[in-house]
Image 1: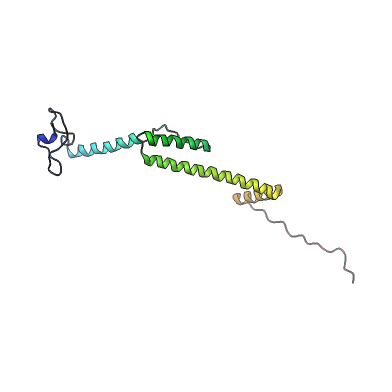
Image 2: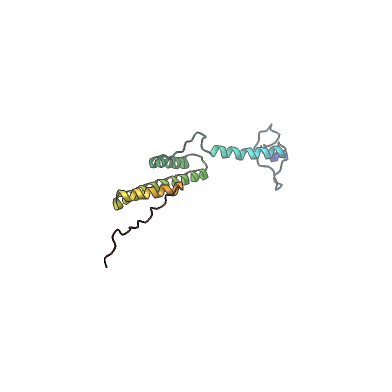
Length: 157
């Protein structure tokens, strides 16, 4: 039996096509007040969003590159097999991309330090580290003054 068979119509004026039981007075929409229908509609969207979200205990951590790869593999599996929100997957993949970029930058910094040590030696590295430390802390030491030699002998004429 259809809800329209009991006299209920849609917005367009056609009979309601919702299937109902013979002893049911009307479908879920026509048996409620407008306020109840609004509340029902809002709950449906919220439940769908919650259903598609990751569990609250889902842990995402990026302690190293291998962990990033494991998380990305898990996200790919969930995107292809589970009913999850793909926008959330996209956000998580962007975060993983940022983490991989940070790991790459750290590796580059280590390589630059190693090359500087090879090229300039230990003394230059110590001076560079002191300069960087003073720039980051804001403390400055004045440069040593110029040594002026006073002649001890008078020039012969």
